[in-house]
Image (tube, rainbow over all chains, first blue to last red; front, side):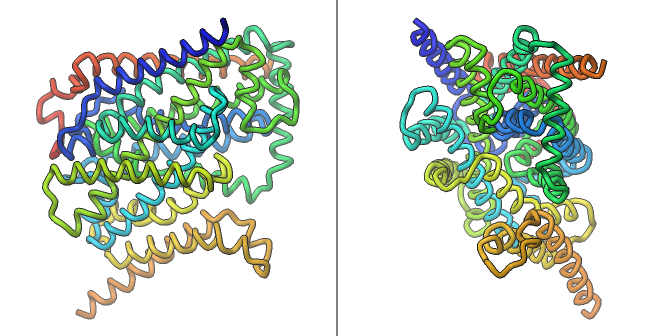
Length: 469
Length: 54
């Protein structure tokens, strides 16, 4: 009987999602596919932004961190909320105000030159594919738990279904299905927390405070200060204006909606982290100590809810993964078309749409194959953050704010930022002769420093050249 | 006392998240009831849709 209800819940979810995706309609031109005709209202911009950043890391990952490190990660999460609010106040409206701008690469191209746009496009597509591989791995894991399928086939199903509606509907389908998925998890996961607090927390508030204190002490005891600084930097800068967020800033109906969407998403993230961390802390008195971080949420729900509730939670987790995955696939495809293909060839709108759709499928295939190579959800995300922030942010943010940014500064900053991040992330840790102090430094810190320095040097060289002329 | 304060903050956060979910659900229903044409945007003047250049 339990199995029948569980299957009915999964089937009902698939039916509603299909209905929502079909109602979103297929995109008929590239402007619809890439920016939903710049017509998104505030609620959809906010819902889609939040649905995109709440992936497996900010749900399963944060519950696990709450379980082991208590409120430590709430403090680190605060950096993420601040980042969103700052983007809303300082960057999103300026980005939205640019004309004929479909992507971040477009913005960089307008501020610098075509070479910078192409380099930004390559980095955007690479980071989107990398993040999509992390989502594919997480989604495959959840689906495997529901149906007991082999991991590879679960990955193929999650990526295949997501790619299907994103390929045809573009950004609008992504945003509308995101809104549905956001509503599902934003209602059900806090209700799960309230259920735990009301019926399963023996000892009430005193027990909760005791467990929070013990977990937080454990968190500070097992995390070094340099690691905390690296995590704060990663949360503050790593996801700043990654392509799917930039697309939502650009697709907002007005500059004001663009600004308010990011500010609301920042405030929401703080409340969301509190709920996830609280679930993790509550779990400490319900499930065994030593449970693997990524299993805490699943084990908690399995131990307090009937089979139907567990099935519902798994469906919600698939929603969380798909809402991030669809945004990444669309953003990667739009960046490929707009920043890599269009600068070299004048393509008619219909052809651009076909290229965008084909790129969606190719990035989805790369994500499915790459899911095997992802070490873990959190570390996979941190690798992508470590590359994105130094590669793009200095050039983008400075470019949006200064009057005459020089292309040489942009190219140097993006190139050197990427190079240093890759060296610290992948090459130095594998070399035996490199001192441990260097391999332990989070890649984002030296890479960001190098990118900023390269920008200043490039700007200075270009200025001296101009003066000589 | 500290425990009560933390629990109250957590409950407020949970309610805020739920209300956000309901708000977005309402916007979603409005959007799909017009076959995904995002009606709120189309009822506005060009001035409000600043820089709508696509």
